[in-house]
Length: 393
Ligand SMILES: NC(=O)c1ccc[n+]([C@@H]2O[C@H](COP(=O)([O-])OP(=O)(O)OC[C@H]3O[C@@H](n4cnc5c(N)ncnc54)[C@H](O)[C@@H]3O)[C@@H](O)[C@H]2O)c1
Ligand SMILES: [Fe+2]
Image (tube, rainbow, N blue to C red; front, side, top):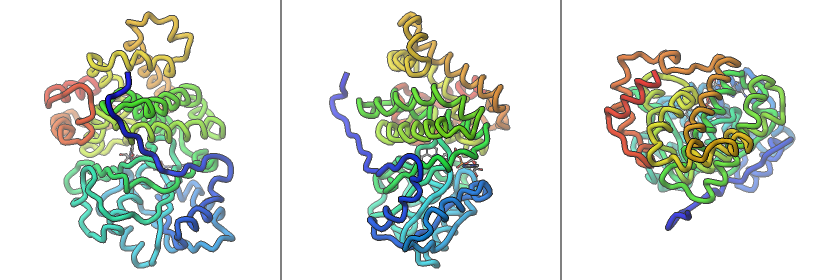
């Protein structure tokens, strides 16, 4: 059934495939920019990816004004201040983010600080608080997970207060997303596994959250189908370009989906686990997704039932009694997690991620303040969230 009203917005230009990186100088010229700052992290530099990007920019009129490579996992307000100072000192006019979600979100944070000419990032937490046009940003994702290259979201850790700050604004959308096969070939199996599960979670939540609509459904569906067909190959044979590009496109499409229909309970609790206990985002997603689906079953069973088709394929879908399809979808996701655990050591419980049992109440309280909760179809209170956390422990 169509919603009575919906909006869908995705103005990001997408360049996907061989030699996509070589188009960056042309794209920046179109955006009237000539002195970009590259934002990245040490792992991405060590994997040789920044060298590939700078080589692809060679021979153009661009000057790389600065390279900021100290992005930590999950970014942070302190790091963003430091990177923004470098941007100003080096008189840069644009951003090229080369990295996973932590790097992409750091670049978005730098863009807020520079474009709003502020030192207080905290002032802009929440929805639609930005007012000034941003500097041109080109996003080059090197993981296939967050979809941040096409989302209006930035997730940045508040180091002092141990929670993840959420910023949402159409102004945060990068101008161009570049998916180049050379960028994800080096992602280690465990990171490949949990980032793919992040993308899958975006798609499942987008398909079942309150702002779902036919366009976000189409993107979410296509993303899940690609994850089913290619995730295991990308984990077992990291150099397989076809599998890598399929996952990169899946992550991007899941990002388009959730940037419009938003994410819900899994992300609200997952952000809190990440903020309080510093667990990698994708790991929390993989672990929490089946438990939250079970919690949401009363409202979401019809949607989860439909998703059995892209999650498990046509044979399994047809042979499963329609009444049992939603439950089977949850079971299929648990089977995916177990498979990834066997292949790549991806943890299956919060305990195995290093979360302390005594932190669970703190995590539940933090989750209650997360913006994603608003979009979840089923309401939840402190005790219910604590119950989910205990099951996932
Ligand atoms: N803005 C959004 O829409 C959005 C959505 C979901 C998640 N997030 C945020 O994104 C962050 C997580 O991002 P992530 O899962 O991509 O992980 P990440 O960016 O933290 O990267 C994980 C690790 O992988 C390494 N790495 C990245 N690419 C590599 C490559 N090609 N080869 C070798 N190593 C590589 C990095 O150096 C890092 O050590 C979290 O902070 C999460 O909250 C943002
Ligand atoms: Fe996510």
